[in-house]
Image (cartoon, rainbow, N blue to C red; front, side):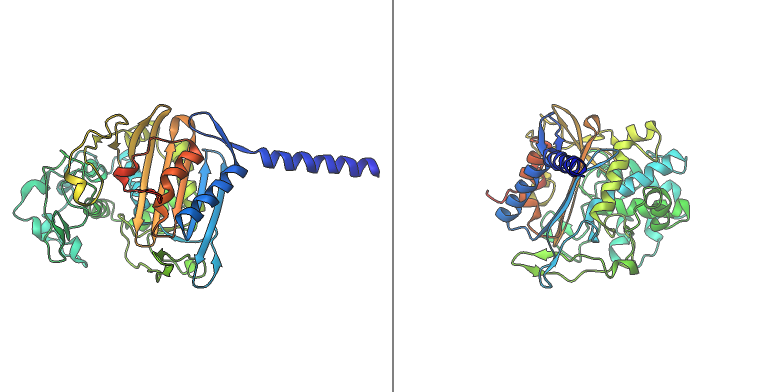
Length: 397
């Protein structure tokens, strides 16, 4: 009996040591133990006063680290979990890009065919429920006839992010304008994504949600993800937090928008990034096209007044945009990334195909981005992220 007890004690000790020494190999081949990583994340959250954050580190086969920190709802004093439902914001866009690539693979759409060629009538004649989906403003600017799916996914349509956000600030009465020649310059645009969604739905005769369920959510077992609010989210959602601990009422979207109506969980979105690393759901040719850089990014910052100021600051990393994701070069291979941002929600995902490593950071705090730069350096060893271009200003700056 004593021998059995001794053997069990040894097994327990070895198991404990293995858990303590469990480590993540970063992109530069250095390692960090999950114990140290956990402590560093807690330090950053405290230093940055971030109300809630989850982090998932994955390879194509495994979850290497996944944990939630802080609050699901500060007001209700509820702890956050990785299974809680988050508003995904623009993390929806590369998922929509994947759907479009699936349609390209099936021969349903050509990336370089003008979208107007798929429509039965001129785009400005269609009636929509929402003002920002009304394209009547384009009737006198024929450049819209040049816009393709490739331009929409690479953010080179010439549209602003949203029509009411112009060079001189916000104007809710502002008409939709093409700000530059389509295909010539990178400028992030939700308007372009929405135009492509409309075309895709016309081509397939299916809704965005139907296509997402068929090509993404069901195949990748993302059972708590949808472009429409689901009843099962009602007991499982986190709320966003804004500035001085203010909780924000959760918006339950009833309209599906590729540019940003998706709700998901950190666990579900990690599955999507694992599928991207494993190249599941598309053939190699399509994945190579999906991740291929389409245009170099020359703007000083992605948003705001600096989006039209040109710079060479990011030339060394070859900052570019692919078809739904951004890309840049590290000494250890290509990085493929996407951010998501809305009041109370700040997210970032990035993966490194040649290193078989990816990370999903999701925060329900309006200052989460203030720790993203340091968090990426510590967790996966990436010191090349264009944090100023992203406006991820560190908490201590």
